[in-house]
Length: 63
Image (cartoon, rainbow, N blue to C red; front, side, top):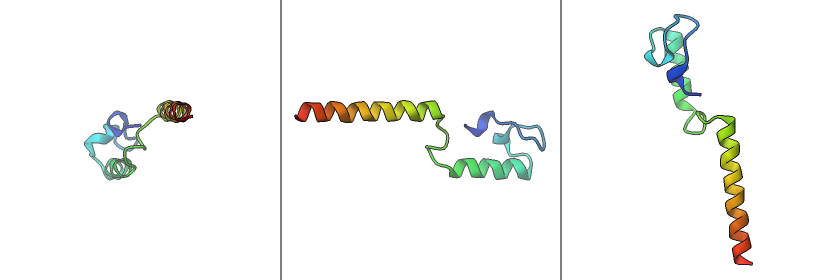
């Protein structure tokens, strides 16, 4: 999940604005997760299925 849609329970402002210390800490933690942290589980499963299909196709073509 991206932090631009999260609302802080402490100050009720968007986390992306970083108005309070809780917002700033959450924003920093979400930014440190890297590119894979923002992907949904469905997107990860889709990526895995595409990767397996590509490997299977490659293996089929080399045989």
